[in-house]
Image 1 (tube, helix red, strand yellow):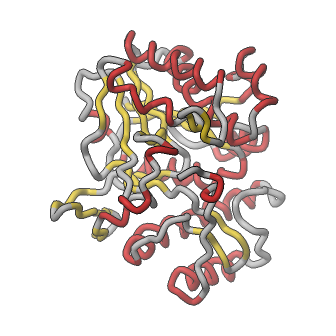
Image 2 (image 1 turned 30 degrees about the vertical axis):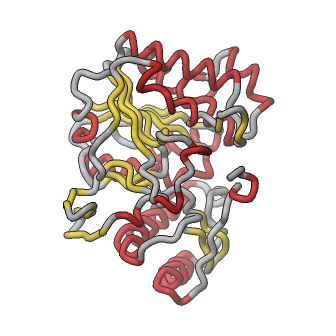
Length: 327
């Protein structure tokens, strides 16, 4: 049994449903713990009733330490602050042998168990950013990406989680300060700070907008493959970081330049599934506020979006925070 946890609010519901769909397709035996970061998210997830899933309300999860610092953080910063606490909560509350944190905007194309088994007897699994050189922001965002991290219910792993939780409660902001950035830069020295840490070696895990330029991408049916340094790998997961709808015919894929094949073979099917899940959610709550404009005609919106991806509209990218980052 593989145990996963993720967190998101109602704005990210379609991403979360996409994530769950990908686990249902590719992961044989799993349980997903979703931390619903607002009441609307919890309400709709209870109505959708996803299989192999437990929905956890903030009121059940938040403790005194988290509530004390909550007013000092933005919505996004508070989510980052809570990441290690969600993993600890699942391991302790449900007595799990292992728990893998996954970002809500990743999508699995193969069994994530292949990645987790790579860690063997180690207690902690970390995922590299694997930046394309021109996008290397290790000095800002860190060497490792929080997107996919596994922790076992063992002493060194729990010590690392408690250390990380305390560090995030002390400082977790969307800015660079004294070598820190959000929840992520804390991971940079874990290979020496803690024992039993394994860094994922499989390059098919953690393909993302900041590194996909290094890969060739192809598909065969529902299977996806990436080629790196002339070696083909079955794509395990892709991180759709930064994908946002801006208006009825404009969207931001990310702040990076993407290969056309990645857009065609990964983004188009993902967005089609996103729109299907959006339509399901709108049937449950017509006033749902998600990362999608209130299109009067969903089919027209879908057509406009797909035409946009085929080059009939200008691509708008959001250079989020870039100007504020030191070089």
